[in-house]
Image (cartoon, rainbow, N blue to C red; front, side):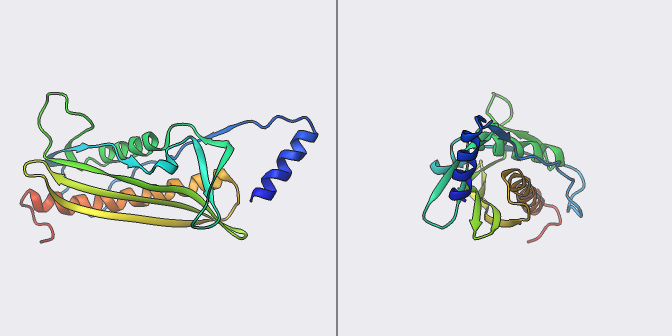
Length: 205
C-alpha cells in the first residue's frame, strides 16, 4: 500500500500533476423493518445521544491499516464530514425514517422527557489491507438506557468486516455504507423487541 502510494506520488510529481483531495460520505437509503412486532410507532420518545468516537478515528483522513498494531492515514482521501458527526447523522436519519418510536430527539429542548436514551461508541472505521485483499471495517457499540431509573435495557457491540473487490477508497466507503446499513437494521430490530416488551405488547419475554 505505502509503496504504491509513494510511486504514484513520485510519478505525479515528475509529471507536474498536483494531487486533488477527494471527499467521501457514508450513504444509504434506510428501509422499513420487515415483520415488525408492532406496525405502528411505539409511544416512546428516544433521545439519541451522539456516539463518542475513539480518538484515532476522530480526524478527516480516512484510516487504513495492514496489521493490528499500526494505523496509517490517507492524505488526499478524506471524509467530507467529521466521522462522528457523519455516523451520528446517519443513525438519526435511519431511526426517523423507519418510524420506530413516537419521537426521536437529539437534545433536551424543554419538551417531553425522553423515555429512553440511545448512546454508544464508534470504535473503528477503517480500511484493512491484507496482502492483495482489502476489507472495509466498522465497529460500533450501542446502549439503550431507560431514563426513569437509569437502567440499561439493551446493549450490543458490532464488529463487521466486508471484503472490497475493487481496491480503491471509493469502493471501501461503499462497503462501509453497506456495513452501516446492516448494523442499523440490526439495531432497529433489537429496538422493536425492547420497545414492544417495555410497552406491554406481545414481544419477546
